[in-house]
Amino acid sequence: MRLLFYFIISCCLAACNSPEDQQKEKSRPLKQEALNDHELVFVTHNGPATYYLNGDNQPAGIEYDLATLFVEKYAPEYQIKFLVVNSISDIIPSLLKGKANIAAANLTVTHLRKELVQFSKPYQETQQQLIYNNEADNKPKSLRTIKELASIADKTIAVPEGTSFAERLSEMQKEQPSLRWQVLKHTNSESLLDEVANGVLDFTVADSHLVAMMQNYYPNLTVGMALGKPENIAWALPKNADPQLVKKVNGFFDKIQNDGTLRNLLDRYYGSSKRLNTQDIITFLKRTNTLLPKYTHLFKQAQETTGLDWRLLAAVSYRESHWDTFNTSPTGVRGLMMLTENTADLMGVTDRLDPKQSIPAGAKYIVKMRDIIPDRIPEPDRTYMALAAYNIGYAHLEDARVLAKRLKLNPDSWADVKKTLVLLNNPDYYTTVKYGYASGGAPVVFVESVRSYQRILERYQPSHMLGNDTFKIAQAD
Image 1: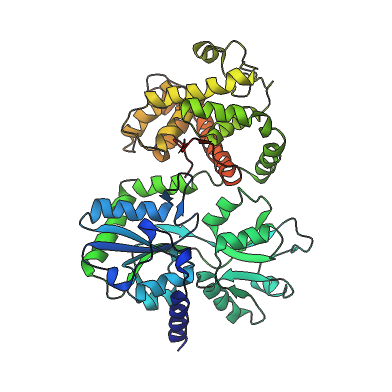
Image 2: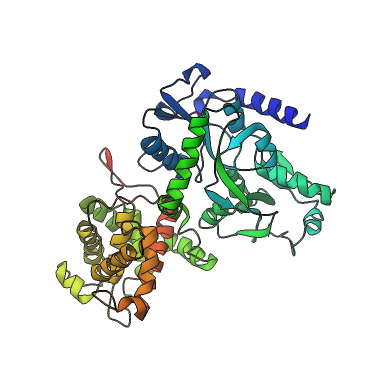
């Protein structure tokens, strides 16, 4: 009876979706009769861990990338379409009502869901976490057990409707009957984490990979405790799905796990999430208000001449100098972009401490590095490698790519090359490559930090428009 009630309520909620909230064109609302032999419809929802429109107003997100890659490589006979629903509670009902073939929506595999749908092979693991605001006056002193969690009955724990979080809390309630929480409609985990960070809610529960991303924007978000064991994330299909389609989906996930494609995608979206610590983020956010405005126009001018997003350039500059015009390292690199004397000469810079010279020179040098990198390497990996070359030199980057090939990794994937860069300080490896020893960990830290800073800037700072064009060559994913 509980499953039947869950199904009926969920279907009723799905029927109430507002058409105005649906994405248009590729993600336009689809009627049941739209499903046919020539279309493969993926149901998803908006969010940083699923599907969203990036700064170019183009679809992005790991679920979008996985779905498009699947159709391109494994099901080219289909035309791909996306049904974007209002909340996660609408995902499974959309499958059950025949509105979509596959749910690609950051769904965790749970007992209740397995009663309604079948899941593909998992492609990611996550951990449910209880989150609170460490700046709140009434923050908890201790949260190590379910009993301690249940004891804060005066605090509000809120989770989105239709998520696995309520299911997990229900299981925990069997052990601790006094445990209470609220299930909220028409919301999502990102919105509830926003509310916790802004002091509107006391607690929420969210998946660890989303929490790590959101902590880059809100350093006051703190993990109180893990709830239960880690869970798997997978695609969902109807119980009566075409067995050949199910076979293709599982074969797809086997393939991308084995050839490194999945590792590369996960790195693209989550690889830099944990690079910065809380104090790093707090300091950066303060300086975006105090120091960045002095140089914003120069970063935007550099974008106009190079095509590199000004927020990427600002992130590089912050990582190099913390936006200190007079910054000078013990090795002699100087200025906002921390140019070496040789690089300054190459780029025609007469005064490295002059932001009007150093910012455009640094931007042009990044482009120079990117242009040397083989054309077959796609974005954003191409820009990540250019940044590594900016930091350590192109020769050492090439050594790392040679090592990646020797170790049967992908030399065209940043996720793999960053593994071999760190081997350049190991004599077992650096003695076997052309340019020898390098402190290979430094460019990895540099690139991952820049990625994090850029993502924060993209959340809080608008893109720079030039006429009808927006330059986004190095959009952070």
